[in-house]
Image 1 (cartoon, rainbow, N blue to C red):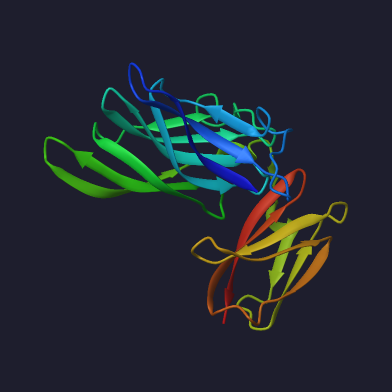
Image 2: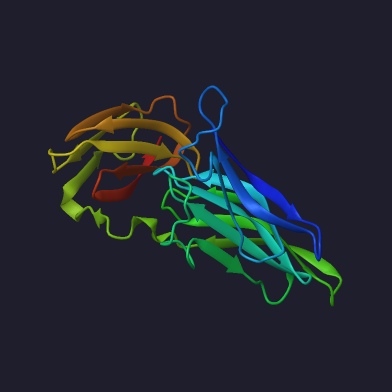
Length: 229
């Protein structure tokens, strides 16, 4: 289990918080192999770092999202931790991402991971000069799959498409096991399994619509679409 938020560090000269993630064992005790005795902390600014959302990637890295505040300057913020609680230096600037929306006061409140690994951060921005507020959604590239080879066009077959009761996935590579996950258009995972070479999946219980099938192995990754009738 993973908990994300922020932790109080001082009140003087200004109130200050750091981003924080705690990982728990199944019995509720802290996992001492993670971060510092079970808790990983960091900051983007040396004042207030507030977290309001968290996602766990397929590789178990944690992305924490919210906002930073320094001298009344508010920005969207994201942090990514490796599976041991250290900062992921391949993400943003040394594991940290900060975004200013046209000089406005920016508050990040929700985060989601798309099936193609892009990250959605949602919240609102406030303009003191205009005395108004607006909803904001930002989408970020996620280069966490850098170095992972994609499938060639003829490496994967999914049929029938459209489908009704069952789909078949055939892979040209029979040497690896592949993790298979199916996502709906809102990014919700509706199925997960593992195949080698050929897999058959019962999709009869899925609602009609378009779905994304994500396949991962140690060195390959791909996303294909199918339509459920």
